[in-house]
Length: 423
Image 1 (cartoon, rainbow, N blue to C red):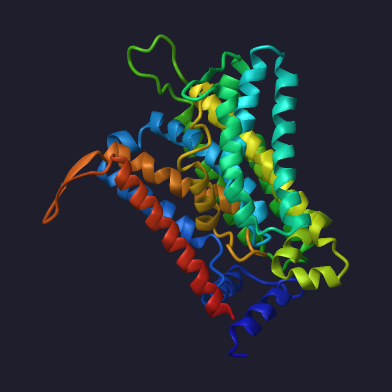
Image 2: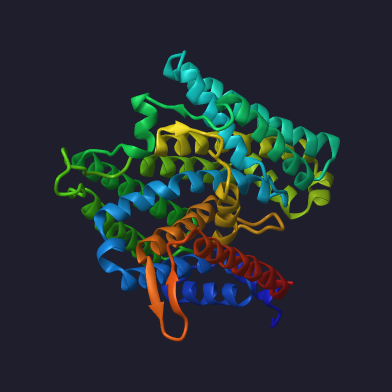
């Protein structure tokens, strides 16, 4: 019984058959962590550490109400594109062109809005994103070209399409109020509280239902603990966001939860349901875990691969709308630069394995928070003098890239080492 895999398997089986208390659940999780299955723990610890460091370095700016809202808005697009990339990462594949897929979809949306109504423009943008994802999936699943090569070529192809749509060096302005408010708009204070209240009730109901279905393998004390923690966090954040965060001389107050928060949460719930509660989700994990075994079990592996890239394309297109909404325009750099790197990094840092078969949609959210915290906090820290080092400009792009790269490298190392330990 000293084998970590045997212990882990036994505890997983026991969760379905043995009534447990809070202490035994904690013990099982400790055993799971020791066996190398870290899950989202590194991302959660990183969020706590970074928040503490930046809050200590610049509490007046970093811990302000306006920065909290800005942080949520900044992280939204990267999180959605990270969700997109997660679908192909679960298969052990990669999509290096997801950022430019987002850019092309955003460009189509912006150019169509100049001539069409909102809904047809959104439909065309979504259709283009799906077609781009299907093209990538076809080349990988049907033709058999490695995803790294296909998507590397697509970086050039899709960037060329983006340049043709917005013209080299130009940009397309977005004047539609609905698109502009995707990221920039806010719920009213009363609507914010209603949203949080309904969300907490649904969360508590889902946890109680899960506890009942488990035949008390999940203790009620754990359910109460989760609900209380969620309630405290939600109430604290909402209390800050419903207060006026506009500057003193602003023409109008700014209050409420940004629209992008419920939008991202709805996507998170929908995609989590698809992965955890549907036959398609089980097949996706099966193919990512062992494609040959999945094929012998009767799963159409090429179809699963193709569909994953299609979903990746569609979600990247939604992320592109968020990118466009944040700056109210689309230019040749929309979805370019570090967008894709941050998206992949978000998924990996959150706990999604680069080797396939392991990960959740929540990983993309947590990882997105980590990589959004780094530039957000470093910008507010600005220039600081360190003993023995001298003055460092933490707000510079070079420092931000170095810190984000180190975070991604550390997360990848943790993933690789934990897998070695669990085998």
